Image (cartoon, rainbow, N blue to C red; front, side, top):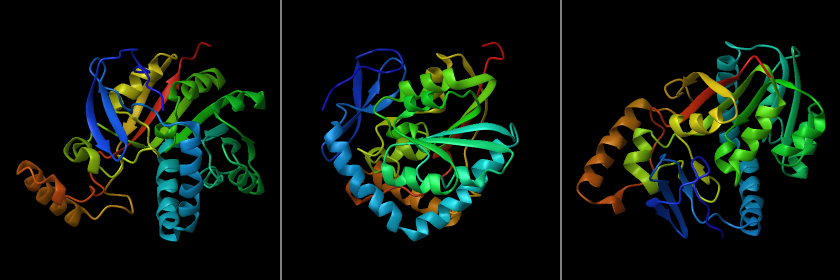
Length: 279
């Protein structure tokens, strides 16, 4: 495991934000970024993901819910751009990319030979590797997507830097299904927030901190949204009742009685950035 300074501002002054098992999340006292520090080793992550992907493949209900979210994400994005060259960084088996029609020329990068093969069988041009492997396509893109991936990376800065290089002038960088650590649930539940899942999630961004990082590479935020009531995860009545009950328990210093947070308003963020029209 290795300790790192804040990837946004370089500061090394932090406070503990939450702990779970052997993992500690710290908050930068300068810019507010939250991340797991020290970061787990490559070997530890490999071992975790081997088990993690098997679970995801076996969980049928999860995939049915995911299909609904894919359509919501696609429809939201296509309000701003609806054709061109499209790159998905962390494309998994290509299921999200497959939702995009023939007006898009689709590319992806993904770590893991099995997922890459599945994506290729869907007719998608996919390379096995991290974000920087996308440079091998020799293409410039009109839109680059990171769906539920930036929080998993040990080096999010690399992915954003690569994306900024590969975008055409005026191109879009699209983040969605990204946990928002400034959400009410995150701040209330901390270690019992349903998105606080180290070592799967290593960096915990807010709209503010992600925007600050992305703006370093010449992009500007043009839109944001937080999906909740329209998602298959929402049960508004039950979710509100649980939040209220848990708030009382936490306020009475009985956190040990609180289970993980439900889906809720503001939990997950969708943000679109645009590259300057001049390269």
